[in-house]
Length: 389
Image (cartoon, rainbow, N blue to C red; front, top):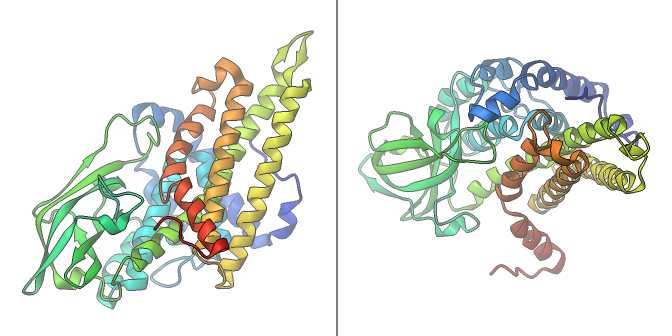
C-alpha cells in the first residue's frame, strides 16, 4: 500500500478553514495508524473492529455535527471530512459511524422525548451503547411506504411484529430505532436489546462491506412501553429525514474511497514498467484514465463542499443531498473500476485496497436510496413532476 498525501488538484484546501483541515488531519492519522494496517485482515475474516468503537468516541466521531449531550458540535463540513477520511479506510467503518450518528442519535435528538434523549444520547456519543436503524424490510427497500411491520397499541404498551433487513450493526446494537405502521400512521420506536421477541441475526455470505456488521431483525410480539415511541415523529417524513442526514455523509465518504483508489493506482503506475522498460504512467491510455479520475474527484469535492456550506447555513435540502450522494458514489465506483484496470491482475489482490473499495461501493451505490431513486428525486425537482408515482 502506498502512502497517502491527499488529493487536491484544484487547491480546494484553500477553501477550508484551519479548523477543518485539523479535523481532517486528525481523522487521517487515525485511519493511517489504526485502520489501514489491519483492514485487509478484517475484510478477509468478515470482522468488524469493535475495539475501535471507544477510540472513535474519544475523537468525537459519533454525532459530531450535533449539539449537546456530549456531542462535538462540529460544522457539517467538519463532519463531512470525518466521513471522507473514514471511508478512505473502509466503507464499513464509515457506515458504522454514520448509522450511530445520523440514523440513531439524530432521530432521538430530533423526535425523541427528553427522557429518551437523556437515556440514550450520552452513551451513544461515548460509544458505550451502539444503535441500529430498522426501516428497510425484506420486500420493501426503495418503497418504505409499503412496510409491513406493525405496532398495535395495547394499554400502556405497543406490540410490534415484523421483519427488517440489511441493518448495519443489528446484532451488536443495544437499541434499535424501528419504524412501524400504527393506526395513526408510521411511528418510530426504541426497541432495546434483550426485549422478548426481538432477535437479530448476521447476514452471511457478503462480498461487500465485509468489515461491517449487517443484520436482519425479527420482531415477534415485541412489547415495548408507549414511552419508547418517538412523540414528535408521525408519518414517513421523519424517517426519510434521517436518511437525508446519512446520505449527506455518504456523499463525502465516497470521495475518500475514490481518493484511496486513485492514489494507489497512480503510485503503482509510476513504478510498474511495461513496453521498453517505461512506467505505464507514461502511456496515453493510462494518462487518459487519470485525467478522468482526477477531474471527477475534483468535481465531487466541490459538490460536497458546497452542499456542506449550504447545510451549515440551513439551506441544503433533500434534493441537494440526493445529487451529492448520486454523483459522488457513481464517480467513486467508476474511479475504483478504472484503478482496478490499471493494476491489471494485481487489482483483484488484497495486497492493494482497490478491489475491496470497489466491492464496498457496490453496496454504497444501492443503500440509503438507490442511484435510480436519487435520479428520480432530482428529476422531480427540476421538472416538478414526480415520475415515480
